[in-house]
Length: 193
Image 1 (cartoon, helix red, strand yellow):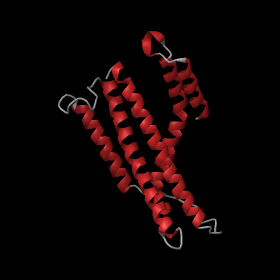
Image 2: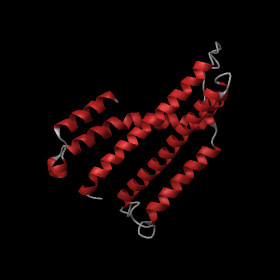
Image 3: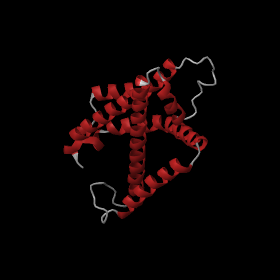
Image 4: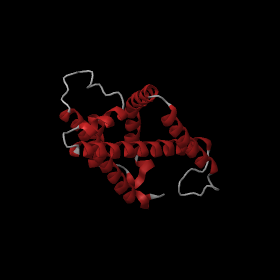
């Protein structure tokens, strides 16, 4: 990829961000529906330990089952999309990083014969993620999820800071260096997150 692909990359990023927000809204609305239509005074019921437990509550969300079915469908779409996107993006980014570190060819635009180790790493990570999700208990999956979130929250500020500094390096970026408005948007997002 080169400078000519930046516009398409921006469009792709915008569409991906928009779809991520739509999926997050599906999950939030569906979960809110469970709690709204089930005003159970028992606080133990309000403890949702897993997505499966949340999903199982949707069917009884109203007397007719109509809105509960919609909530269940939206929740399932949201979880499927989030899981698929996460599995593909994390595995692909990690495979790409391994390719950078070890000097392997690393791109989906290259054939398997030209970049075998990249594809091997990608497939192994996808398969291992699938195996963990199939055989690990809910408690283990919860620990993994919390650990990943803690690591992300810990490392993201430093990564964003260095990325913004790189985007402002005129000798490195040339004509693609950040504009004033891009910096305002980037630092604004950084401080909001």
